[in-house]
Each structure stands twice: as structure tokens, then as C-alpha cells.
Image (cartoon, rainbow, N blue to C red; front, side, top):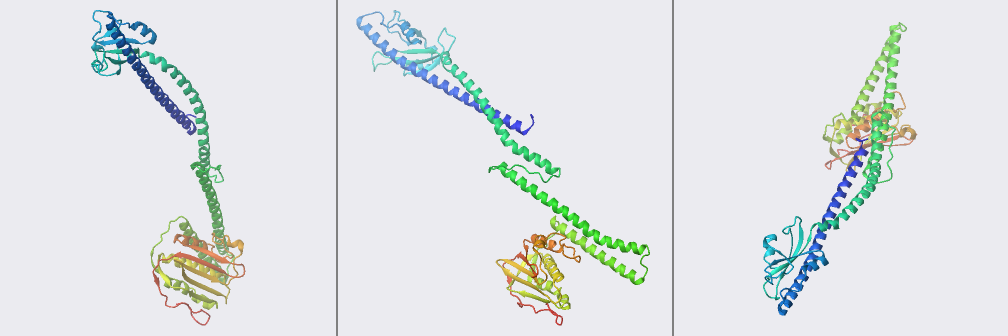
Length: 485
């Protein structure tokens, strides 16, 4: 197609090759013309010098022998050389026919008429309508004497055309053959270059149509197009994974929303139809409806929080945060529950804690989510430890429990939305915690074995300023003593 990339590339290649070929041919022809012109001037100069010597010797011999003219026949010399012979200046033998064609000074350049040195030039002899290349050489009777004239040997400039015209034909033939070969190479090269580009274009069209399973051949090379193809395949794979996560997310949201809604609707229908008329049962049913509504509200709030985190549509308020006080606040929020359930609940501070620049509310939310998860899975009488320390420029916060642990299968997707082994939570707490940690420049790690508890590790960047702790270990919290600070 005339408007396609392949056609345009082929046309551009051919145009570039044609221009380069024409320029090369023109330069070669010009150089050859200059070379043949210089060679012609060299030959004419040698002939002019030789004829000058012959004419001087013949003139001196004729003078010694008392002849009226020298033995110098220009017509024979012209026939032998194919050139024209002219003479410029005073005749050596007045009144006698020398056989030389005498030129007036006006017929040659003024510099030639000075008779000072050998010169090459181009001129048009009187009575001629064509240009001649010529070489002039001064004529002296004695080597040291002043010149009395100049011998001029000339040839038609058109004779040079006979030398370079055959070259034009050869160059034209070479250009046609070279253009044909270059054209084939250009078409092959354009196909090679545009095939992956067109494949990428088709792939982009498929992506735009929603087909994220499309892939393009990335070849084995290391050029830019190969790298672009590889990046396209990576992008398509990520889009496919994102679409799958979104699909799973929507399915999970639909399922999680349907569960409380189904319960609410069932009790409301029963109450409306009069199936439940006992006051105590009515009150209990309303309590269930209220609890399911609270659960539904919490679920919607968590979904919105997670969506904002993933869309980066939340605000991180950076401020100086007293990490020791923040951890103590998170620890104290669960002290009553720990005492009530006889859980050995400890806060361990292993090193100096710095004042960090971060979003304190977000850090508190992360730690609270992890503690809430730990208390959910730790049985009464168990143990939970909140450990905080500084390590190599980072702040490390660990939440460990002695609950049932997490199986390997669940560990692989524990931070995914709606992954939960019970129906009490929304399954979004750990997913939100991970997204918050990432937003703050940190990370969350998990170490757990089935049956031996879990340990969640939060790593956050810290500043260098450190604040000495007031105490290194909080007392345990049990049923008879209030823990925390």
C-alpha cells in the first residue's frame, strides 16, 4: 500500500540510494573530466615545448644557410599530432611564408600575450566557432634572450567529450544495475525492519480490543525493536495478570457483599412476613441485621481503602514521627483484650528508636492491622510479641504469635484481597497493610510454618537521628495486671 510504513521505508531507501548514486556518478564524471582536461593540457604543453625547440633550431639553421624560410612544415606536424599550431608575435622571416597561422594578441588572454612563460588556456581562434584547449611556450633564438613570440598548440575542446562520453554510458549501466540490486536490498531490509513493527501494531490493536493474551515474536537480537517486542510481551503479561486480579477481585467483592446482604435480606423478609413474632427473637434478629450491616460497612470501607491505595489516590502526610510513642500506642490498644484473654502480650525494643519522617497514621494502621490479625488467630492463653528495632538504616517492626500458623498454600497469597480462613474478617487487612508499607517505601514479609505460629516483619526507611528509649522492655500483660504504657 502506498501509505504503509513498508512502502514508505522502501521508497525512502530507494530515493536515498538513487540520490547517492547520482551524486557519486556526477562526482566521478566531474573528476574524470577534470583529469582528462589536465592530461590534455600536459600533452599540449609538452608538444608546445618540443615544437618551439624544433622551430628555433630550424630557424637558426635557415639563418646560417641563408634560406628564406626554415625547414619547418606546420601542416605535416598538425597531421602527425592532430593538433592545431599557431604562432603569436613578430615573424622571424619577414616577407616569407612560414606556414604558421599567425594569431593576433587580441585572440588570446592578455597574460599569454606577455610571452613571459609557458601557459595553458582555453580560447576561440579567429574564424572558428568552437573552443580550443591550448598551451603556449615562448620562442627565443637564444636561451637567455627575450622571447620574440610564442608557439601555441591547440586542440578542440570537443575532443575531450569523445573521451568521457563512453564513461557516461558505463556509469549509467552501473547505476541501473546497482539501483536494481539496491532496490531489492531495500525491499528486503524494509520488510525485515517493518515485520516486527507491524506485528507490534497488530498486537497493540489486540490489546486495545481487550485481548491481553496476544504475544509478538521478540527474536534473538539485541536491537531496539527486539527490546521493544520484549517490553511489549512483558506489558501484555502484566495487563493479563492485572485483568485476572481485577476479575478475581470483583468476584471476591461480589461474594463478600452477597453474604451479609443475603443474611440481612433473610431476616428482614422473615420479620416483614411475620414469621418471627416473639419479641426476643425479633430483637435477636435485629441484632444480627445490625451486625451484618456493620460488617458490610467495614467491608465497603476496606474495599475503598484498598482501591485508593492501588490507584495511588491517597495522601501520605510526611511528618516527624516518634516511633517509640507510636509503637506504644499500637501496643496499648490491645492491652485490655490481652488481659481479658490471658494472652502473654509483650513489647520488645531491641535498640534505640529514631524519629523518622513518614506518615504516622499509616504506620499505626499497618501495625494495628497486624496486631488485629495476630489476636484473631492466637488462642486464649497464647503469646503475642511486638518487636521493634533499628537495622542498617531501616526500622524493623515484627508481630509474632503462637497461633496455628499459615500453610504454605495460603502463604503464597496471604496478602491478596479476601484471603481469610474465617468469616470474622474481610480478608483485606493484610492486603491494605502491604499496600500501605509499599506506599511508605517499605515492605512486609512473612515467616510462618503450619502449626508453629506466624511472624510478620515490617521494614520501613529511617532517618539517622536517634532517640534513646525510656525502657527496653514492656512488662507482660496478663489477666491480673494491665500491660502497655
